[in-house]
Image 1 (tube, helix red, strand yellow):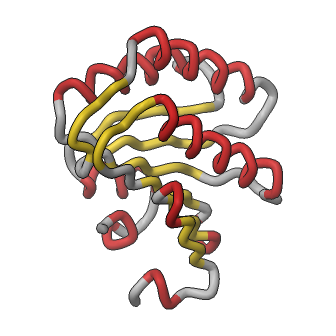
Image 2 (cartoon, one colour; image 1 turned 120 degrees about the vertical axis):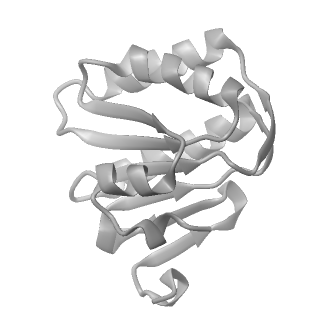
Length: 144
């Protein structure tokens, strides 16, 4: 089934975000240049969704269409610490990042390291199938 035909599908074009209520999953597919503005925009959407959600939801970020990464180590470090702090006392959620670029993988492994031992479980994947298995969703739901 085409996910856009589902009543629980909501596309948020401005942030390249899809929310699948039936899978308890938010998907982010940034394109072009990934910078602080783009990350901050999606973080605001995630925070808004978290505030409205009756139960936690997992995340999948597909970074395969990003052409250039304009993020500093310091920014990634600060975001990871803020996200980690915001999850104190909450139920666990998973955040899977699909990457095809070594620079992105390095930055996201930093994020994963900084959120380790918190309810926010972060993993970096080079295959969608492995990410789908870890998230417990059909691989088709992670395809563009």
